[in-house]
Length: 214
Image (cartoon, rainbow, N blue to C red; front, side):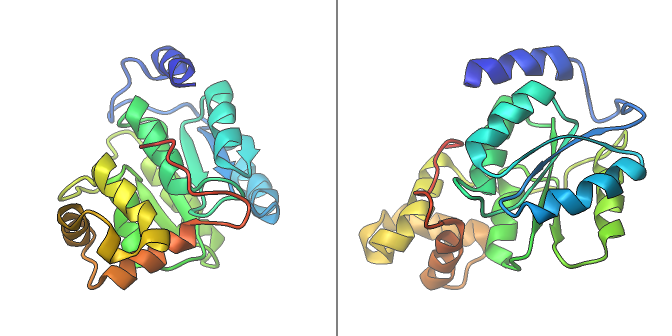
């Protein structure tokens, strides 16, 4: 699958920079395990200057759809039917640091997960339930020429992410203490429990935690 991403990156994103002007109707791909979300967003976005080119409910389906449709921006929930939005964004950023833009749309307000999303390459973070036009404004912002992703002090490493994903089952005392300490510092977590709660949220009954992006 990685080879396929390299191919569409070369095709669609080669030579594109933050100063590149978008197409008249930027392509948006929506990833959410709740079918009502894309059902509600698609007509709104299509009416207000975007073109929804595809939807998916899980991580692997999203990767295939994104490779096929080559969107300018991906709107993704944190928790998916299978996999999670953090791993999806990380996989996209492993192939290209800038494109497609990634906007997290979630109903879960968690500062640790918000910092984690920013650390692995999310461009913006929107809470579900807010005014729908706020998402439209965010999409216009991130797909505009000259947009710069908010700076991140330190990127979370692959090894630190492995520790993060292990916390729900192993707990703090059973993971690498050095990596755990570094992870807490980067995500500004006040306790191991806070990290564990965030990691547990990404898990679902339908899947084990994904490590595609790491």
